Image (cartoon, rainbow, N blue to C red; front, top):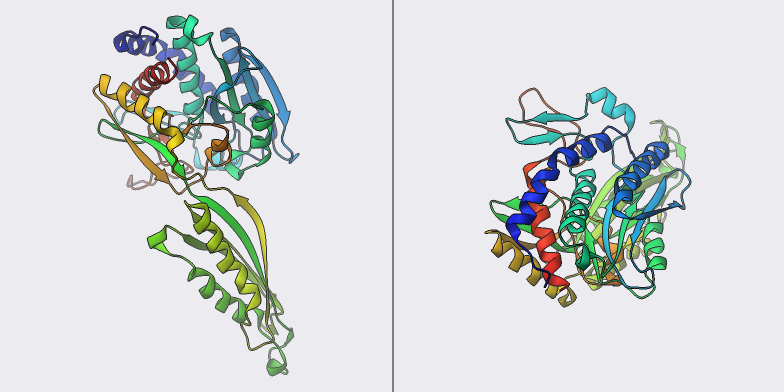
Length: 406
């Protein structure tokens, strides 16, 4: 293993903090809402410039959806080798008008030990932590780093699960990878840091109820109320949920009818279902798709079911074991602990884990991702990151990488 002094690594991270926080602030002050491609591309440019002094060459690729920005790939080392892939994303969930309306921007709170702002933890803080790690490796362990091919892969549309990003990563890794490392925020419990080792898969559906329009006063009996039929389908869909098997169905949106003096001839709902195990997700999908075979208002109301998107599950796997052992060993050397957790939310790990051993949750500690609200009583606060977590988490990640890839 490369000779490593955790104290030296820690000190190097501490020395980088002022520059790192300046970089984070510059990133946070760029609105990079998924549907703001100009902002996403501006963030990509800033990010590429930040890594250029380390010898990383940049490449951008337009998202398949022209309403989104350009994916960013930063490369270092032998292009024919299996890379270590460090994953982040460029987009956030906040439209520029929301940031302006809520007055949601960079705000440092020394009293709370937090920095508030859009993307501070999800995931611009993760990108800055990658930058810090590369800076430390280039300074303290250049010979070790030069042994490997490195790719920093940044999705322009992760928040809407733009699936073309994964295709671009696969094209650039024809032999697979040495490891996939995703820098979504990494919560902690005291001195125990979470490592994400599994995520639920998701299937999205649109269900259409086909009824028969009629005058609600004069010809009510001749109509077939699509909303009433859809209501029965809602109950049947929700019943597919099985908490014991960690299978959930969420009916998230319902639409139907036009005016109240007309029996509605059509209605729609949109739902998602999630599960950790691929076979359980498939079983749940069969339950939802069976709704299209059942009558819900006598025989007159017809239900059609359309799958509009699938994100694969990332199940627990023994292929990650050597990574987990390296992180646990490195944590012990720092007086910390690690805890393996599964998350219901999606990340790029859902699509990329098949390329090699995968760990997620490697970013800094923070909270309230996707929230821009602040209430006067303090019950609601917006997204934040804990700046003191950059040094600890970065030191843990670097020491673990050195152990895992001796």
